[in-house]
Length: 410
Image (tube, rainbow, N blue to C red; front, side):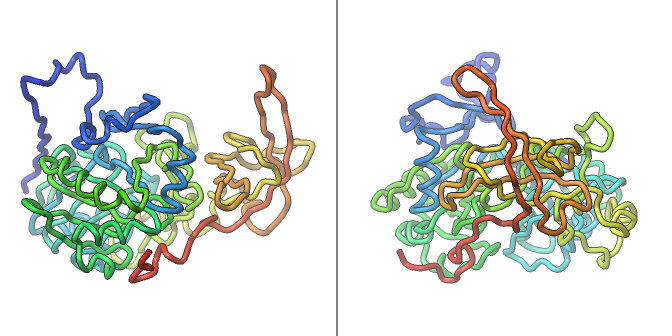
């Protein structure tokens, strides 16, 4: 067995010393830094990422109406290769990796021995002996520990690969204008490689917006020419960069979960019962008990014998103010708490107050009315309001174009 981890850091004499650079800049940063108007940043995986470039509302509508681009480069990327790569991954994650075809992508989760989720991510299959696992948080220690006994190489390639999410109804048209002939034939979760002068770009029909969209993957050294080619092709289509605030709005409408928001890695939780299993997050469809042994299987079999004590659901709230962090009660007098909201949004496209929330059993079933206790800060004073809400199906927003192949030629 061989297990290796490689982290590549590029340094030149032009870079400031590391102690003067508390966070890294992505390979695309130099290409779009002139677009930054409000200097709202946050840290992701050691990188500087933008909360918004100018206006999160405009960035949100660029994805719903035209084409928005998000810098995915800070996402952690692991190359997993070797004769046992497929067998190793099938033991690591809860879904059946052997069912994957080459040049496909799947969403997956992996758990500890207690069936609690460690992390979620996307798994790319290039062949039976080569995969790429992408996720939001560092996982190298768990991946290496889980590889004991397998002939597999595990290498972190985060700094080697730059990536952009190109999302929205005209995203396919922009890629075709770049010269990616045949990209319109990609079905959801398929991938293919296309050429630009001097380098190749891998394109996957994936995204985190619930809309038509693609993700572009390229060697970090070719980030600048890729960005330039993309924005030249998309100029007439209103293409623009978006930040994490707009992305969060989009993923809530799509009913998609986020680590550190809907769940915490079981390695990071301190308080009792703060861990989550796939059934509590509505991810039962990712668990395949028929495939054979995987980490957490026995615990999940036991958990699956009964309905979850609580579950993530969608809520429709009868008011126009976001209910971030609100507690949910079974009656208007707020006598018994039955849940809490993890993500909330006044949806611009739906004109609806929506939320992702955890509800206790049996309240997450049926259409029983419940109440959200919301605190609002108005003119230097806090106000308490109680609004009626009901369980509603997820995703909240799911346009036909998301899965249409080929997409409409807009």
